[in-house]
Length: 478
Ligand SMILES: [Zn+2]
Image 1: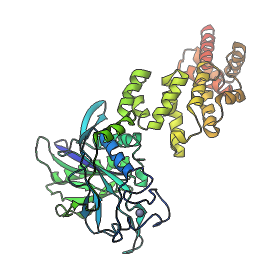
Image 2 (image 1 turned 180 degrees about the horizontal axis):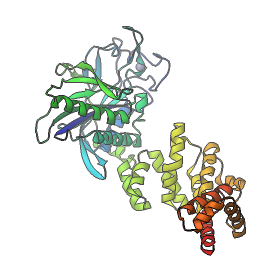
Image 3 (image 1 turned 90 degrees about the vertical axis):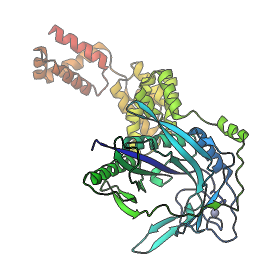
């Protein structure tokens, strides 16, 4: 398979975070009883007129700035005509030849190597309704989503990506940016961010392009990675066995971890685009762009680099911590308060992340505050509690949101004095006579086991450094 290379482009649709829909005042919110957030405009009733949502336009300008795009001052809306039951007007308002943003790029990292993925366009359109296939030929349609502001981000042609890992890195980096700048919640499982890779393969060194397929309805980043890899392998297998690739749209079966044919594409569909007569072209002034630029937050990459230089944490940690802005801000506050950035990073990426994952919530929804986490880290460095006690304390703090100083009082202090530790040592040595004999006979592997037993007998309260020192002394004097 090594003599083929993949060529991957990506279309990403992101629903925008606005209060109301794109061209009417209906609420823009996920969920709700079907067909309860609709009006004549988003139901496409004859005679109804669209009114542009300024916030949605600002979100796309914001995105275009973050993606290093050239902003088109005279972007305009067009009608994309086609018939489908989820599109009551018979056309979708979109942007055809004058999108808001063009010629941008973002950077991605694969195994420490940075590369650029160029972006062809960023444009604004409206979402369609949602069809659900009930039984057999019966379908139901929910128009709550109809007219929700939708942004489309398309990579440049010829595509810059050549592996499933790059496709994955691209969509995760893009999601990060969109959530940082607050234009989308990036929730793939709710359909507010939808990724559609298009892929072809070609012999290495060949300048032309193979026949491409497109994968629809990927509902997780993992599915982007797995789906792209499956499709690349499938195409190479077909070509190697002398077959032909059919240009088609394919779906992703997550249970079977494979793509399947949905419909073949007989060339480009004719949408008969024409300018939307009910909306005037946009007038995006430099002042407006500057105004938006002023409110841009620090972006994930810049933050990551700053974390490495300012806090001295490893590149890897900085990458993980800056994927979501809420996590990055939490880290920064904790690190500043406790003065030990690496400890803050370890807790946030370790026990904290594990508990958040289990509960399925975001860091800012948790009961743990940066102040409390910082306090707990200080309790460890001041030897008030051991690392082992801290793990227990952290879980308690996570459950209840209690003050770590109070919890440490309840747990009782760490045992550091020599006479108490000596008594525990005696107890363990007499109950583990065989192990002890082996240890003093020179079996060093038993040392760690003995330390473990002492920690266990002390219920995790023994000061581990002290235990190590005292046990070593005993061994040497035996
Ligand atoms: Zn409406």
